[in-house]
Image 1 (tube, rainbow, N blue to C red):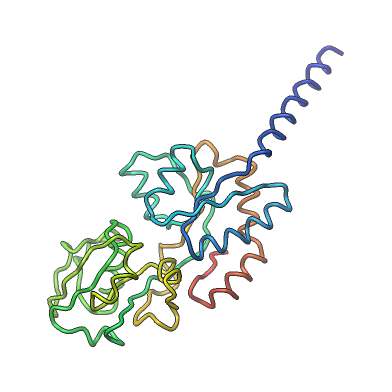
Image 2 (cartoon, one colour):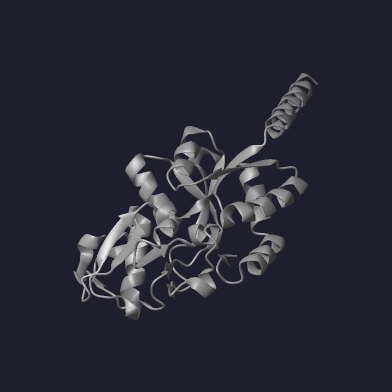
Length: 261
C-alpha cells in the first residue's frame, strides 16, 4: 500500500511539472520572411496538440544559434545543415537537427543584366560572407559556367578556391541579409531565397539563375542536444510535417520554397 501511495505521489509530481512546463510558450527562433510565415502555420497546428509556441524573429544568421545555445530559445528554424555543422564546429555549440523543413534554392539577381552571359569583364558579383552560404554561392556561379573552382573546394569554397575567372569578376563578400540592398551598386548578387522574398524579389520570376531544387541545403529545425528526444520536439515536428503546412508552402511560395517531406 505504501509503495502504491509513493507511486501515486510521484505521478502527481510529474503531472504537475508537465503542466507547469506548458504554462510557458516555447520560443522558436526564425528569420523574417518565409521561415516566419511557415512557423505561424505550424504554431496554429501545434496549439491544437497543446503545444504553445512564441515565434521570435531575427534579421541575421548568427544570433538564432547563439540564442538557442544560451537557452534563450527552445528551438530555431532558419538554417541548412552545412551552416549548422559549421556553427557547431566553430563556436562549440551542442545543437542537433530535430527534422528537415524546406529548401530555398539560392538565386542570382541583378538590376543591370538579364543573364549571366551579359556580365562585363571586371563586373562585381556580391556573395554572402559566411563560409557555408558563400561557398554555396560560388558553387552556383561555377555550375552556371561563370568561373571554375578547385575540384576539392567542397561546400565551403571561398574566392581563394577560384582557379579560372575568364571575365576577371570581382567577388564582393557581404552580410547575407544586406545583399538585396546592394543590387543597385553591384552587377549581380547571389542571394538566399528568404532574404530575396523579404526584399520583394520573386525567385521564380526575378532570378537570372537559380540552384537545382535537390541538394545538401535543406533547412532544419535545431534544438539543444539535451532536448532532442523531448516530447515537445516530436509535437513540433509533427505539426511542421503536416499536410496542412505542406499545402501552405506549395500554395504560398509557388515553387520558390520546396518542402522536404
